[in-house]
Length: 430
Image (cartoon, rainbow, N blue to C red):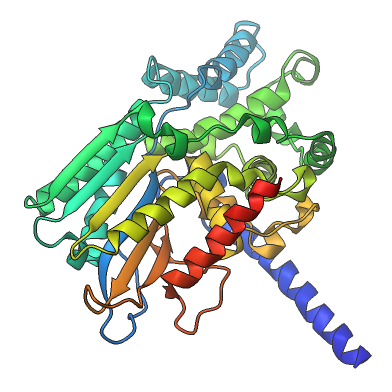
């Protein structure tokens, strides 16, 4: 028995190590994954869905989606690297590559002038393509003059994303009755802000753990040597981390603009450097919006109102003969928190050890690229069928939930509803 336990333990350990290595290998093949929440949406039609149980057909779709690609929200993201490199250039401290990088940063900065946080044109197209596939994959939901109820947060990029998606749906199904709204009236659940949870986000214990994790992942020397011809200047006069970090951000965000991929900036980083930068980001997102035990494991409950609203609206819609679709448009913070709260693909995994995240599949770039979305697709035989089932699509891929099901990736709505309400009701005790 003891030998069997040891063998099982070794197998689990080897599996975890393999999963961690898979992330690095995946990033080597696709360096753009390191962009994390600035990753351009994987826009493709290669989706293979599991056939529904006999006789069950889709009849209602409930959705939460993030806006498409945008410019950096903070002006400093463009100004700081530009100013650091410009000053060094004026003092003759840049290499030829450094001068070239300055030129590229200048172009990117100029393109973003007065557009901070705005949706890009490629971002609009991303939402149109997602909406098109939604109608193509589940045409039964959008048949006839059913209602499509769309709501957005009040951010301009989210409103425009909603508009792009709805424009595409209306083009394909002009008979639909479409309602759109973007009002503070709905912000209490579309993008709820919980001061108590926010204030407890980065506890002392979380800061210590995060800083220790990051300290092992600082590797800027090589890049500084490529950009600056004076080592003393680079070491003592340059805010190296700020420059390193924002060049990483700019190389990521530019892919989602009309400028496209910038090879000069992308080539500054090795695969291992991108991996370490992403690891830091992944750990930060886990602590800030995931179920990290370093701060009590409650951060996903910021989205408790949204989950209740999704349940309430689904309960109401499945009583109708032709309910249509409910579409909601917002932000990656909401998307990530909601996915963790629902336990999609094991994102409810809790730990105090940040080194364990990749081993257990907590990989943020798989969750919230630009345009990321959760789709709950409901199935039944006919309007009198009480055995309603559904499946969850994370970025249009079939996902798992933390409840048992003999028909996975399909689940009984009654089971999931009971699981969520029990979880949400228990939170009242905290």
